[in-house]
Length: 536
Image (cartoon, rainbow, N blue to C red):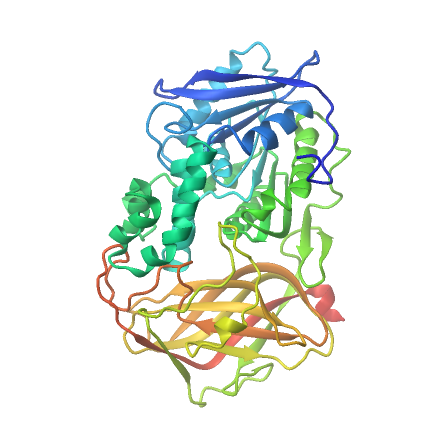
């Protein structure tokens, strides 16, 4: 790992580990746990890493070994029902209690100094928020990397089922803890059968081809799209941040599927007055732990040393550090988002984006979305290793994709903050999705996606309705000579399950019906121009 990744710190300690320790869960079920520790004498703080993905590669080297070498006891534990631990795995119901039970076990260990931190990515971030709903007194620091706190928000962003990401997560949760060979076989099966599984109906039966059988939590998530359903009671651990006093560092990626949840928690922690920091890089969910790992590890280590070892020498000088796309440079900021001015670009009937409204008397622009030939997804925030940013020209050549583009920019435009499209939408059936994407078009006409979002329309909305499509946040600089483009379509399949157009539930729908989507004026793209850039 050190040979393949530049920027990792040199090791400070030789280490050893005790594998397969049995820690009693809240109900007594055995939780298998590996303990990594420095061989040198003295007290060292402890890091708790709880994972449903097993305790082998990559978690053992990336967290157990590297962090122990830096002077920490690392307790790497398999969540119940995974990696040999007893009980049945559930997406959220046991993590808070099992985390508390593990801390109770730590208190009985002679090497435990009473100083505890937590660290980990993705679902390993969720278990941290679950523990923080009632933080034990020993908990002194948290580092949540590309993490989530709200399972419903992960499965149903914008009201549509996040099909491809849900399939990848289900595959990982059901096979990765069984070892590398099992995980690789499952990965290959999903890759071979994804398109067919996503195309057949009903989806509740078709998806099993890609996963090798039914997955109960996948069925449960798909069957319950309403966040207020009792099925989701207790799932959202996000409110833990509202009154938290444990110093918490957050790490995200501009193309990470959990970016919005990371930024939500940052805002909550700031409101609560909790000491926090934010690092957001040019990463997807996977690349944050691959290409981005030197930055992610270094930043995480600095935070843990500051709050567990009383060594603040490596902390960043500012609370926020973001990578600015287009410029390919890092920028330190006092907060996120920085002060910005919203600037509006209006769509026009000739495919232009301008600062002048064409009024509401202009004829609407329409396209036909056919769920039998759904608008495909291309790049974007995917859990899989597919390119986060890619050339969108093949997508924009389709008749069911509208594009609106500025003239070449006379000077650079820098945006820092949340992006949205406020659209006037009507449909002929009431059943439709609206997908909006911001792109950067270079002088060679290559259109590269920057950020995007989807919104499922409700049949009882006005027709036309004012629909705000949140397109996440970004930090991006459009160079002079480039053009800004807004892309509008009726979906992004299979990243999101297609809207079948019939109003039937996603899981059990058996019919497909096309829909005509019309875009009325005035519809606008809203970009956050940083205050200093707006004043230039």
